[in-house]
Length: 237
Image 1 (cartoon, rainbow, N blue to C red):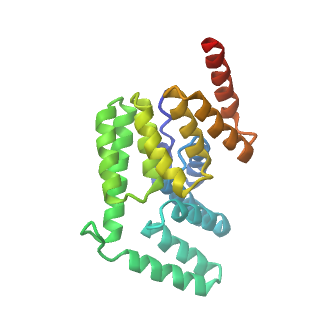
Image 2 (cartoon, rainbow, N blue to C red; image 1 turned 135 degrees about the vertical axis):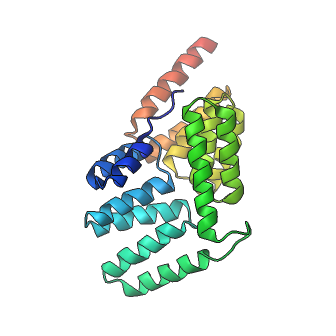
């Protein structure tokens, strides 16, 4: 598999230059291409907030905290948007949750610090993956998950990296853990089917991809995956 384009880095660069609309286009593309990580949704929310689109910003912050419930910055920014929308009670609850998450946790760091360290390890992991150094990429993603084992987007990233490194069987375990908590996460379902396919379990791949098709029948990747299954089945017969 080829690595996905580095759309997130390009989006961060646009954000840094205050080209928020350009960043939105890149982030939308990144999320559609399977890079729908919590930090991508959070950055998208920031872009919408800074271009005075609070309803869209709230949707993006909601997506970020849904993926990473301990994402303190996303909770804080979500609370600010709720306050701007006049939803004071919800804003207060969100701020209280963010403050509670900011206390030291099992890592020994304040939650916001541990979140940032986890995301820094994840960024390094992505950089090594894009450079083709999968061993280093896996090491950093495992470090990130050691700090934040509940961050489903990091586990998905680790699974993707294991597949690209030629270890689909190890990826299957990571994806099963993700889908156990978020059974309808479309990108995880597609990747789980791919891991099964590459491990030689065509029946399992078909089951997962059929389930993904029921959820999103217009997903363009599924047509390619069905072609792969059909070709592999013909070769076996």
